[in-house]
Image (cartoon, rainbow, N blue to C red; front, side):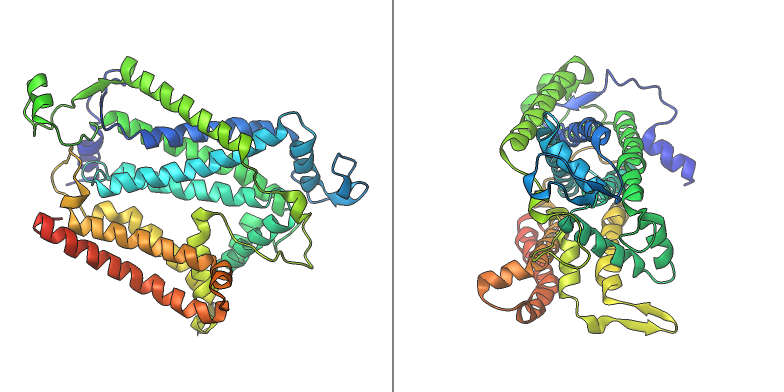
Length: 435
């Protein structure tokens, strides 16, 4: 089969199909995807507001704002602008919190949406392309959050961003080029904040918008997946329970549009409550970037904690030299292993592929192999995330990280294997060993 035929089978390029008549299953409309979309809209709108007042510069300026402890000090312009947004601009603190929680909900809803798609097998033929697009959106969402880390140029954010610089420059051969491209030189260089600001507000958001458009276009072109039908619903619609040529559900307009409006209001209300009652990163407590000091506790947000966990537990003796090329522990743990994990997830529809189009979702309890792989992957991420907090975990247990790290390393390896095998054994007996 040629590439053209493969694409036509999945996107129906020869068909004329309108959006308004597209059917969405009434009880299975994957609303987590809509939550992600509306979260991104919130991020863009609040980001425009914040960008009006933000100054992407590390040049020192005299602070004359409302925060007494910095009054009259020479501070980086970016740090001063975030202080001004937070404490000097009407509703600035609320908008900054809304932006923060919108970013977290965006990533969380993408992750939960993809987990649901994975466990129900909704990535199978003909939806492989949209799975890949969704995974790329998840990576870009994490990249957007990371590039926003350093923008306040406070002690915590700058230190965390510096870890990313070290990872980028650990890439063999291309490391220095990547460091120059992303960070404008050795971190923190004079051009680092402007470069990250450019990536954060323009390059990555545009890429996300393009992929969202592609994702939605494919969604419209393809028949929506549907859960198992009840006999009563099939009889009422005068179709058979296994007829996948039609979708029993609601048209995009006005029914699904009304549901989408409710989801939007619910998302906006949830984010507003979070922004109103829960504080976000307190740059006053950390102060401006100081290259001579390091915060006592530095760790990334939850969605990058698993990568940090790899870094924490992989021993330094794993550094190897191949001729003039050095493969450091940072490269193995922070670049190669995460890339392999993400790459495996991206390619999964082509590993667990189906020759025939599949339009009904599957019960995870009837798919022991796929469910076992998913449980193993989630277990690895959870244990690695726990390893990223090894200092806090060790303190709670009363042991040093030196003692704890080997156990966490073996946990990252063995817990997923045990969880996957146990899941497969339990579900294999229930479903007779199906996929």
